[in-house]
Length: 239
Image 1 (cartoon, rainbow, N blue to C red):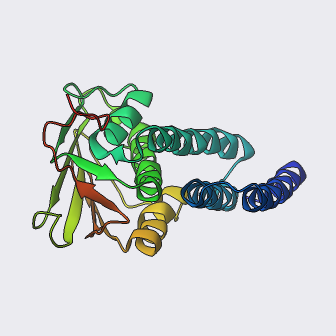
Image 2 (cartoon, one colour; image 1 turned 120 degrees about the horizontal axis):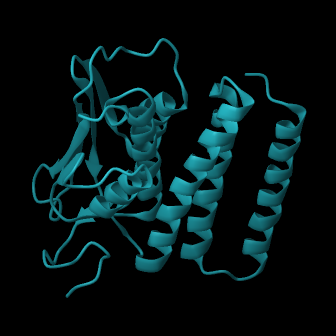
């Protein structure tokens, strides 16, 4: 899709605003951790804006999908700012609820208590958003009998030594699922952004009854950790 003049102008304005904000952060004595987190978020927003424009087929589609992507990033950012880390279970269940998919009805979630660092959480949040949106538009969530099972596991204990985090998104109840003929934004998030930022390996299988997406990445400290207190609830607090 050729970018409309208004979109080009808006992107240029956002770039200028981001540059000014980075200068203000550097000059205001903002704590290093907060400054670093805001820079990561701004960089991701710029990437999302550009990739959304490059991969959209219509202006309406661009606007609709961009709003959902920015909302997904914002939700994770709020959780990260509040708790310092983001529960993987909460990240997934919150995104499903945005699409009116309830855990225990059309979705099952199962895995150990896992906390993601802010940058990794934003990337995972964006990936889950794209999987949900695709399931609504083309996959299991567009059918009354459709659903998804999401499981995650960590090889090793994920504490003493890094293990691999593996997340499996398995849709069911679909028919005639086919591999897309073009690489849209969601495909780029799954196959490029996760690989570059998290060293993730992503496998997509278009099976007869629905999409299977498997994401594997090293569970290193900058990515996340298994919760040390298994009694911790999904907000990161202990009861």
